[in-house]
Image 1 (cartoon, helix red, strand yellow):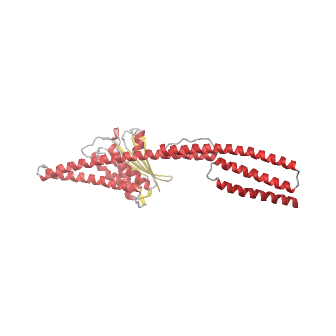
Image 2: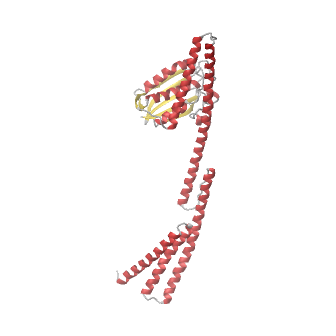
Image 3: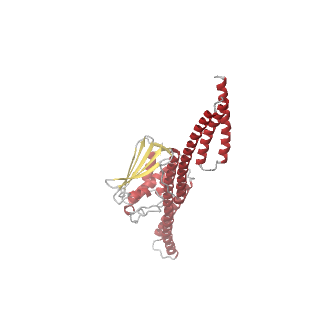
Length: 377
């Protein structure tokens, strides 16, 4: 590179740096102004650095005044056109950003937002993210509304379920105190049964409070699935016999799972009792356990008559107790009693604490439901 070329490069660089410094100062001054002014400033700095460099170099090269004016006019016209284009682009971006801001205000006020496909890809991506946020907020509101409804139902049903046995026990204790009971031992057994029922309800409420508070503690250890299912069936068999329901179960040999024994036993027991409660007399409940590629699966099938799509979405909700075919009339054994609707909510909480999944599906011939619990090994 010749000496003249080196001088030209140095002069052009010095001019560009000087204009750039002035541009940075101006950019700091307009940093809070609209983006269209900032885009215009970028164009002014770019053209200005070229123009100042051309003027300085032309002076060094002793270019004629006419040639210098031609070069300056060309640079000035190009700068003016670029400045107008930058302002137009800045106005468009400002308008698109204003639309986004109005959409964000709508999201804040009404909780809904529709994605706008206009503007550059960055603004479109931001608009799509706002739309996804709107969808998540709507889902959260629906969950919150459903949870609040479940809480109200829980308070109502638990109050009713506690008031009824308490009224019965008061009447029986008054009869015993007045010596009016014809069979005191029978009254004692009934009082004990009602107390046990209320204790189970309080235990369920306590378990749910720990689940919802996130303080449920599990102690995983290797569990033989066949032994656990057998114990659950043996515990539920007297209730099934009283309700004229047949219990059957099978588990593949050698299936083991790492889980909290008490928690998993409660899951299987609650599912079996729920199936018995909603299966008509002379029906059957079938339990099956097997190993899968990524864990184990326990299924409990009943003959409840099936669930509607709406009931499918609510079956694990707190205090939900079903309608129609899933609400049998209580019998003398108490098996038909619906309880407070806490059993399946507890099942879901314990399964999720094990990083597992529980779901329900309708099955046919005869019509019923199958609850599937999947747990990692």
